[in-house]
Length: 246
Image: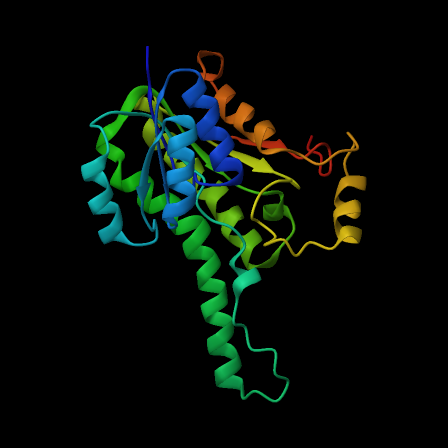
């Protein structure tokens, strides 16, 4: 049966690979993002439906509903990223306390909005359209175990998902988090990752390689498959062994 799939932040990187994966398998795929150009390019290449949306804005989400079907079988909350890389956090050592704190607060809230609020708002907006037998998958991060405001946002996402899984379970809907480690071919580092740091991230893995967007797309596909119907409320780490669990 053809499924209706919505992938937020789907124009590049992990979202793009996930959209291509499901489109190639015949599903009807909707992708959203804030930039029109990469969305239109993906729509042309993969035959997906592209919709511009800022998932931090309730009004934008309300408008988005008009372009979506009444039934959503898979929601992938992928919108986000480390907003510290675009932050205006005041680094002036002579800045007064209030100005420095205000800048810190803006930067911290930006990560919470981009990575936690987007998932919560989007899932809430689509609640009545989430179909029985379906799945919600959030894209988390290895950073949830490492600190920082970005990590705090991703850690909050995993905790919030525990309650969501309990809410959706009686409706035969699963809810899980995929937590990637270092993934190449994304816009995450804004093309500013030093070669030395990249080598360190790869060296930290047990597999000896960086992850790819296809690695994450395949994991999302598994969680959305019949084989994963009894998996919910979980975090599935995809980091090549860079950080293990027991």
